[in-house]
Image 1 (cartoon, rainbow, N blue to C red):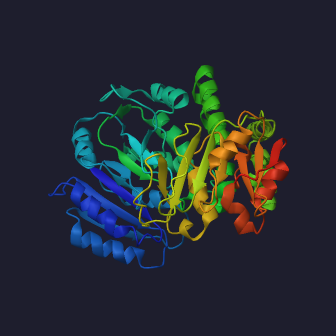
Image 2: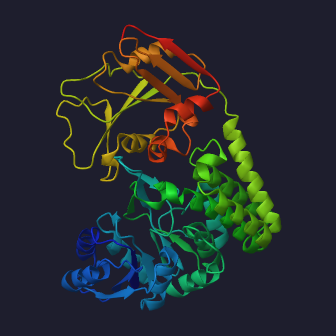
Length: 478
């Protein structure tokens, strides 16, 4: 009935939990399910461990493929597709999980559906957050509805329906093979998820069924490709390439109004993938590679290439010409919370964020108003990287990193600058000479807090230099 394809790359630490979740989720007879592990040339024992755990714990047929060289997740999934034996396939990542009943509900639906794709909800959370949110649009009240390819693409373009990478959907194996074969013609620097989705829905001639059952859970972490500065330029280039590919193969296939909606959706995603960047320098970390990319893009896609490069530049110019904001709401990030320290936490104009290392004990007297986040093992080594976790949750307002050992409270900063137009506010403490900075969230671009520490530069100094309007006062009461 369904083959579960799981790409692996140096995933040993995730495998015991993953296999245990599978063993608890799959039917005891296992006849309708197979699990296909694909090791993308990890070379660290991942494949051997997967085989041992699967043989010992899984109640279904399993196989472990080992690729001869590391080529990325697109090719790992393709290898799993070619090896799969069941009529449907679905993808699972080693570090994700799912709600109880996920596979039970899926198998029941696959036995009856006439659709080519069965789409289930996805819940996600950004690094460190304790709460999840549903991604991929809302289809509540439409359980069991089967949408035509055109209806699905309208939903994806207008409401982000069914967007969230390749997870949470099961597809006929023959359809998936056709999608991968067609997409292999397009270069990708990081992944092909965006184009794969559009092609999957476009080719699903028997429709896409919306299943409102238990959710697949995408638990993001700071080690993910999305948050790795080394991949940021690649992700950005993939977004530009994806539009050129869509312009080449999808635009002639759909009507003008649907294409306009798809183009608008791409523009929204482009802005999201620029990570709040205020200039090319924060997105393009390899100028030589970017120059080569532009030349190849304009060579391969003359018309669409010019269009996407202009759109990207215009988006960044819009960010640079942002309106100045008044300091009304202050987000205060702490990386420690001394016993007995409470601060003045009642103000509705201040939001507190406490970021602690993974597995660190929560303070016993932590006020309920403080939003607790937990960093992963990598971030626990750096206060700047831990503050970066909180920035993933802050959309607007001004941001300050506060050291609880200071006398006084952030509300004092808010009282001084409240209502004033500024993108950077500086409070100087005469007693110590220390300066506390509050930056408009829109001023904090792609680099965020961690980049400067890695590059050996002072990010606060860079942000102050970028600011067009800032306030500075000396305050003796703190």
